[in-house]
Amino acid sequence: MKVRLVDIPPEGLQATFTDTAARPQDLGEQVESIGTPPRASVWLQRRGEAVAARGSYAAEVTLSCSRCLAPYCLGLAGEVEWAFRPQPEDQPEDLRLTGDDLEVIFYRDGELDLAQALRDEVNLALPMAPLCRGDCPGLCPVCGRALQPGQACCRQKTMDPRWAELAKLKT
Ligand SMILES: [Zn+2]
Ligand SMILES: [Zn+2]
Image (cartoon, rainbow, N blue to C red; front, side, top):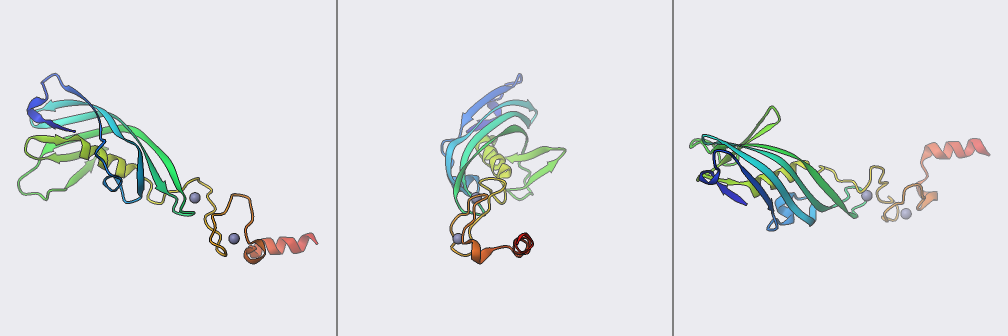
C-alpha cells in the first residue's frame, strides 16, 4: 500500500489495508509463515510535506520456538504512530530516527510506503528469542526430543545433581 502525498487532502485520509504481498522474510528471519497477513488502519494527517500516521495494526505469524524448535502461532496487535518526512538528499536511504516514541520514516518520490512501514512495525514487535510458551523446557539433552513440562525424559541420565541430593535425603 502506497499513498501519494498529493492524494492526502487537508482534512486527512483514512488508510485501511492488508499487506497480502508480504513474504515471511519481509517480516523477520524468525518468521516461518504468515497466518494472517499484516493489516492496518491508520489516519494520515498532512502538514506540509510531513505526514503523521496514527492507528492500529494486527498480524499473525508462525515462529519457531528457540528452545524446542516447534512451530507456534503468534498473534501481534498494537498501535502505530509514524512520522513520515521527505527523504533528505544527503542522507542514507534506510535511515530511521526514533525519538519520543515517534518513528520518523523517510519517504521518496512523494510516495509513502505504508506497507513497508507496517512490515518494519511487525518486525520490531517480534521476539528476538521466540518461545512457544514461557516455560518451554526445550529439548532433552540426551535424546533430543522436545521435553514436556513436568515430564521426565531420559531421567536417569539427566537427573539434576540438586535433585539427586534431595533423593538421598528422602531415603
Ligand atoms: Zn518450545
Ligand atoms: Zn530424552
